Length: 257
Image 1 (cartoon, rainbow, N blue to C red):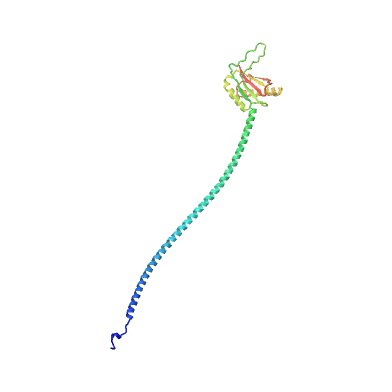
Image 2 (image 1 turned 180 degrees about the vertical axis):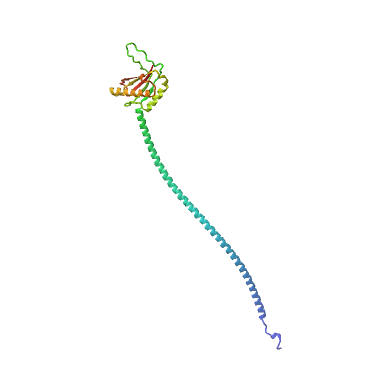
């Protein structure tokens, strides 16, 4: 039979088109999902990149600030170091100057001490020494001499003030005057009406020279007593006496009634 079904040719295209359409739709759907996922992922990456860039900017800013602070600290430390170095140099110079001044002061002190020692030695060898023996005016009355003998009172004994003069010294200096004044002041009220006896003993000089120096010493002592107003001029008796055993001259001063 001419139109029978068994003789018709089978058509595969509709099924193929349907299958292909399903495949294409599926691919399109997957592609759309992939695109959405890519867009979302890209947004997150951009956001992350922005955050990282911001963090890096903040870190760079912090690093720059820290570097600036460190540089300022370094400058401060350097300035302090230079200042301390200058102060150290000044301190060393001051120490050296003080050491020089100390040496100069020590040298001046030694010179001054040597001068003082020389002055003291000179004062010692040129200052008459004052020795006070017992002075009792109430008992220091000379005994009477037998008739026919000298009328001069016997004033020998221990009741005297002895002034020893170094060689070539004929006058009391200030130190000796002060010592003698200190000895005589307690007797100021008792000297009225007494006779002042000065026995000037010669030193080791020649006889004529010794007498001259002894007399000069007695005159100087007389002037001292008169200046102090301890005795009256007419109550002073001066006598010179030899003393062969003595090296230095001396005056024994007595007050008798």
